[in-house]
Length: 392
Picture 1 (cartoon, rainbow, N blue to C red):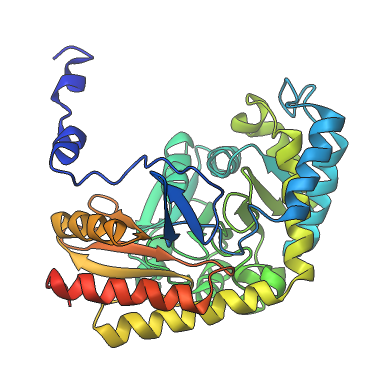
Picture 2 (picture 1 turned 135 degrees about the horizontal axis):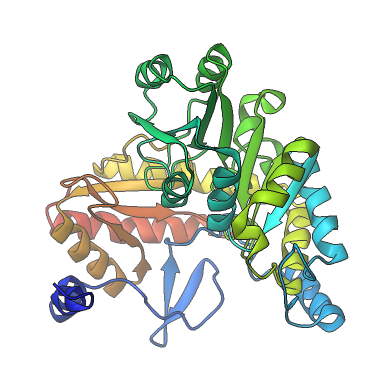
């Protein structure tokens, strides 16, 4: 088969489009807020990772504008060469303080953090150990490394213990999501740490969905469990609670220095644009100062979880503002997503292979800026559509 023959054979997306069941690459005509404009009409947004509602905050936007005026639109080079600005360093200091580490390093995307950090740390004589449901960026990072790769059953400590028991290399890195992005459950960090320390392994938390959501003032999963000092590496992203794009890794100064000089995704990529750097820095300040946002996010979560469960939806293991409504078959998830959009609610369908076959779900995610009235209106629609389709 020729290289491009597979292009013609890929028909899945077009078949879904023809059936009116394609719900990807939808075009949004407004800011990412609690409601968005699509096709000229307003819908309630329950499919965004803008947990604290900061993407359109006046202070965040003003910081971006000021940086744009001072530094221009881009850095025209990598961090390694000409692309490190003073505001990159200021943001790294702020991030290190936020998550309780000595130092931090900023990358242009969250995926680049995982690709670069895992590649830098895991060599030929090392093993990287991951949860089976870790984010794709972690899995891809392990593939780029030269080490052995082992997976354990999702959040299963007996499986992790066995994986560590049979691991024969001296160097061992465990990488785990703090909050799992599809089902919204939290990793068992204290138990993972106990096993890691017993086996001489190093733990790295991917806190993309934990920063801004868990811990005091949104400081993340390690803070939530009170184990920050025991966690060697904390990774986070800016495209969720922190209202921009990019990511970071935080650790002790020597480890950051090491990653800084070996992470190919940092060295060979253009650095994070000035406006994005400034907006993240402002978003951290707002997150710390406006504590009502985190409280309202969790209040909204309680309301939605109660409404879904009262209606008979299976919300899986979620205990965060990411709430899955487990539907079952892929086709039904697509149908429900379409019906909800028609009724004025934007949600995301998650189907195989992102989840196991037969475990398709509607992924719901909340913002601090959602009013309780909006949550109730969305849940009224969700309940009615679910009953009409026979889901509940």
